Image 1 (spheres, helix red, strand yellow):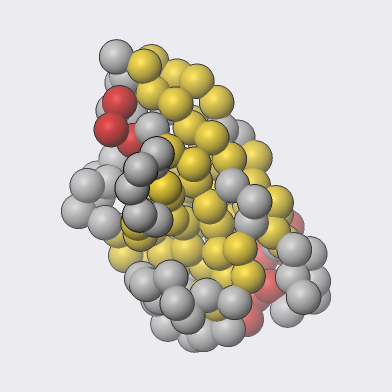
Image 2: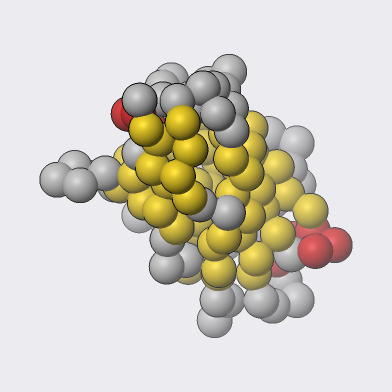
Length: 124
């Protein structure tokens, strides 16, 4: 098991920024590929960003590329999502996830562990 706990969500005006954090428990965090997904009310969970176990490769959804940045600090067992230039359509519950994989994982199915989610609300 590897519990994941997200934090950093909240209410922000359009154009603002937030940084989400996802803290993992366990000694093998560095071996996991990590990702962020989001789910808005009435919609399916969608991919946001992911990076590989080494942190050298990343991938973003088209809707967030250039505005969001995913990163990891293996010494702190933490993955981050820096979100800039936020838009009302970014409003959703954001989830982090961990996959026993080396490469970047952009679909939900391969992920082994999920956090409980953190709410991000962007007002217009």
